[in-house]
Image (cartoon, rainbow, N blue to C red):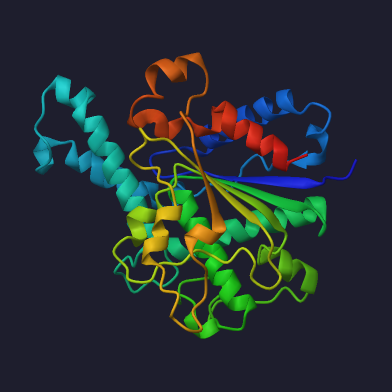
Length: 310
């Protein structure tokens, strides 16, 4: 049976290994197969997803080791703090370092930094799906946390390129004038621009953290010429890193002529969940900030995924 759908997964911020992420995808695949046994064979799920944590990990490990070592001027803590507050500190330094590296300017003259590299990985993952499934497969994307902002950047830049607005594209983007190289295959080029995207699921999305200081905030255009997709965003009240997106409509400037993008209120469907991946997750994580780690095992999220994959 030919594949009808491809589900591309992308992780979030923090210290994550490639095998850990493969295990997460394998667990997600198992849960989906149990919910849609008859149709699961028509869904292709790349086992590696879009893994990008390693791009910045070496530098972050160096910094954290120094920070945790009082002999290098770092934190002088006792055992209790090493096992409690220092774990939170580690998550913060890894997470926000990732956020700055993949979405902001890294301050170095190297224009092929993390922003460029992570877009290459999305591009290569899509190329692998195209090779495996062909041009007619429908794309469903599942992004977590920081991965939502990174995917938004990729899609935004791709839409600007598709619309002939290359002068507006971030110079670090693979879609910029200095970096873009056509494949010579029109159907493949459209696929890499994500024109086959049907549904985008975002979980624990922290886009509001990155954009709330700007005067005109716009979502990617899900009805832009050549595009037609849904964007469904899941958030948990207890997850301080996961936010609804519709409220960003208050920063949309409808009078800005010729600007790309649409109001988040027009593009996104927000769904609040009590994220948990089962009884243990409900007891330990669903009621506190660790809910941020629970979305991909949550029943509501899984059921919505099944609806869009069948």
